[in-house]
Image 1 (cartoon, rainbow, N blue to C red):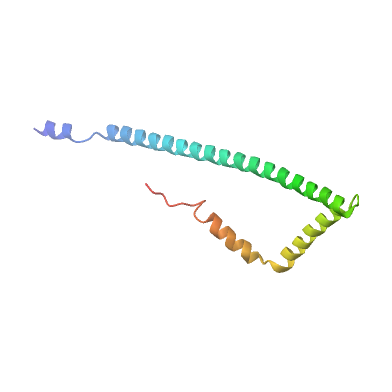
Image 2 (image 1 turned 180 degrees about the horizontal axis):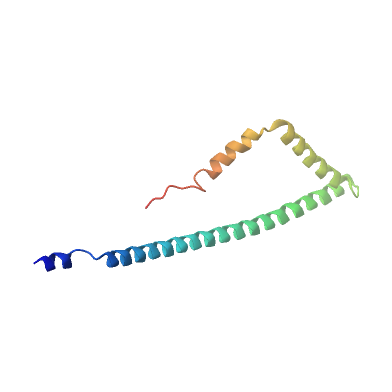
Amino acid sequence: MAHDDQSSAPRPDSILNNLTGYLDTRIDLIRLELQQRVNVLFVNVLHGAFIAFFGLMFFLFLNLYAALALNTVFNSPSLGFAAVAGFYLLLLVLVLVGVDKKAFQSLADKTLKDTIYKADKR
């Protein structure tokens, strides 16, 4: 009967094998989750870069069109470009003088809230 008690007790080598298998599985799961997050990040960065590039091109050509249209209105080869540049200089001065960094900080706080660190929902 003492022999039966030993056979029902878990053997240390099987517990170690189970623990090693569990740890290997957890490491594989972490690697897969990391790979998935890197893939999502790559897609988001690439998508954002394309949107930024095409948005910049649109903005640039819209400003060139506005400057050329103002050249026609002012009947001058360069006064339209000066007007557009003056408009952006005025915006720059307004931002430098009137807008505090705290406004940008509150915008960043609202936009980036819980994006980098999220509680694990498992």
